[in-house]
Amino acid sequence: MQYPALISREGKFILAKFPDCPGCQTFVESGESIEEAAQEALEGWLESNLGRDLVPPQPGDRIASGQGVLMIPVDSLLGVRLALRWARDDADLTQARLAQRVGMTQQQLAKLESGGNPTLSTLSRVARGLGRRIVVSLEMEPQRVVPRGKSSLVREHSPEYLARAAKESVKRRRKR
Image (cartoon, rainbow, N blue to C red):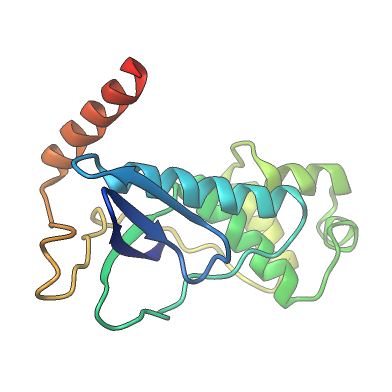
């Protein structure tokens, strides 16, 4: 699962803004890696919404033309939690009602949506209670999408380069 981030330059900073997540944005100084900061901001924003039992928006394709775009991945476990919350919302069920339907407590279901490391059998049981099924796939790492002509703001790089740049960014932040 990935969310689009609009990337722009604001003076000496690079800004990442998520059009699907109102108020979710972050920035880094020029020369630092925006990818790591954007993923941290996005996941924090999504976690905050889940923690308040809100229904975070699903990633869309509302992209303004003429801006650089990065597709920011969401951690797999967070993606599972989001999918559970979206499915429960689609079924118009409270945690208590769904928990009763699948034979668990509301607190156990709340833990599935708020954290933890659920088993596939538990996820499958909850999915059946929602009239759904679990589909597991192992996919390649998502590619960063950058519109042509926007490579001066954001460039596509190899995973090795991105990992090295992220480590250097963390080191620079610790030195401050």
